[in-house]
Image 1 (cartoon, rainbow, N blue to C red):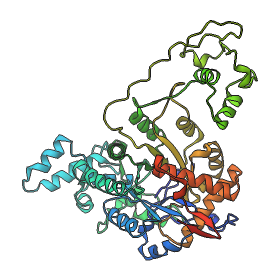
Image 2 (cartoon, rainbow, N blue to C red; image 1 turned 180 degrees about the vertical axis):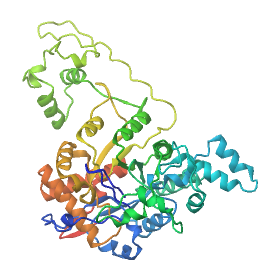
Image 3 (cartoon, rainbow, N blue to C red; image 1 turned 120 degrees about the vertical axis):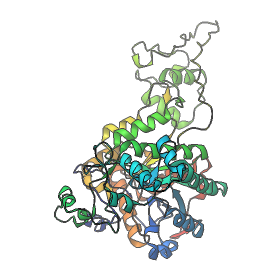
Image 4 (tube, rainbow, N blue to C red; image 1 turned 135 degrees about the vertical axis):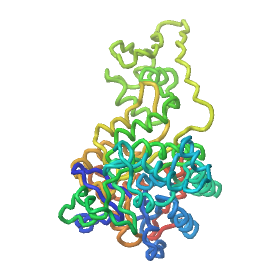
Length: 487
């Protein structure tokens, strides 16, 4: 469930359906198993029975609130070989969660006095909703009837986090794939008018009605404050870190805030990596490298053109490598000297904070539509000798990403081979979901220049590593034999 800003500020609400250009795409990819990294099949219960006959090898089925999480759990237990469940609260529903560490709200919650619910809801929704002349930052009060129609919110830690932990731990204890999702940040979403509530006549003037967008009439001017969305997002990401499961993350019109939030969670947990100079030293002194690593060193580290064998007896001092000045270089080796040289000690590895990490080990940014500059932030290490601790994957769909084809081609072209995923992001299982998923794979093939079998292997391996991490074994993947899937 995603409505990325595709450059035109467009926004979708409710169920997403593929565009006409998507459904008419000619699919040349053979009908081979492809894992769907992000979809919402429980939104259309009448088509769930079609899952066993689908061509997709796996469906990563997302939940978005407290209502559909039981449905996703039931679906995963019914089709354990095909469905990997995702549990989480989408940012569109974050206003239905209240901060149970807020002293004022907590005091009202515990008072039990007559009429406390009305005042409690007015304070909570007045803080987390903005726009329309009432709510957070608007200097006004929300209309009483509107607040009443929103219902009673749930406690963040006392309800949401407890249920989330229970679901994630249950499936992990079964040695099953499970993810946190769908969670994230969305600056563009507007609340729909609650059912049974008639908005004032003046409200219609604040909601533009563009041609061909009849659903605009059902949207209120209210948005969820970004501070509240970040609060709910961080709480869920911390649970994923404690349980040790990956996350599927939604981001719309909040790409900078998303990166800053993730970077804040990662701060202090960065992973120590080798600098170029350290790698060269290891190459010369040990050369205990595999073929691919040797090739990488040859191609990208040795600007002077020397191969590994030519460095047996000397190491270039590379005084012009200013980006590595923070790493002490080893003394040069001499081929005509019997004196044993010693290596200057490397800086000690920083000791990570204690306790479980407050972030998932692996993150998938679904229907990724951020500009190239934002992608570069994720791909660039924070320092020459440290890397971000979470593995970040990037998933693409024709449902969302085709809205800005030029950006899609540029960004997808920059994503490393080992971090590419595909998804349908559709709300109904069956033939249409298969077709849209294969359309996404066709886009990836076109941009990356991969053949059909290569694309399947790459995306399948990436999906397995994202979901299962080190537990992933290629034998868990369905191998195509005579057109059938062997599980």
